[in-house]
Length: 219
Image (cartoon, rainbow, N blue to C red; front, side):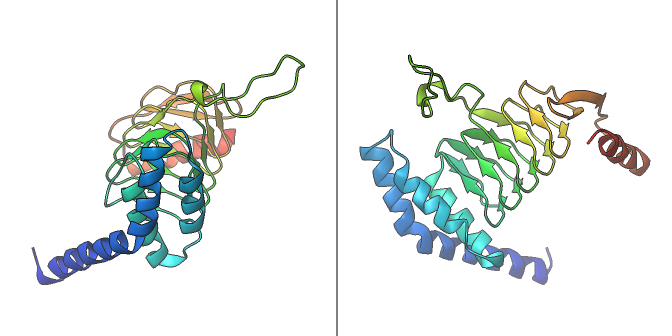
């Protein structure tokens, strides 16, 4: 390990520690809410909306510090872009996860190395609302919430709406709506999303360009 690498790692650890300290008041408030009002997420929502607006690299570090305190689990090396919001505490973010700007993430498990582009929405399932006796639509039914899993190394394209699990290594095209589970290592696109092709585990540059061309022709 050279000196520059050591300095970089040391600086990163220090900045992460500072972020944890600065975000500890918000984290404590969320912890008290979880303990004494476990069905409520109003405090968590307010804090999440606040930290979403912190700009630049310092903002990303502070967001990550807050979510390391407030979520079920959050890796120290994930990236959470400007405007991105977790709408529920029941989220697990593993190592190497990238979340683009303005994404909305509900109850979910984001496996190692998965990539989420900007303006992606991950919902807590597709049965959150029902109609009352007189036919009116009711507010969110928390008992119908499910935890969506985005598999290791999966890629969700710009503006995708995901309502079901996405398998490891899968690719979801930009603007796609995913109402049903996506198997591992397949490319899907469209509304509703349909399988375009299977993906190899190891590919050449030409195959990568072919994957992007396939998506472009269906979006």
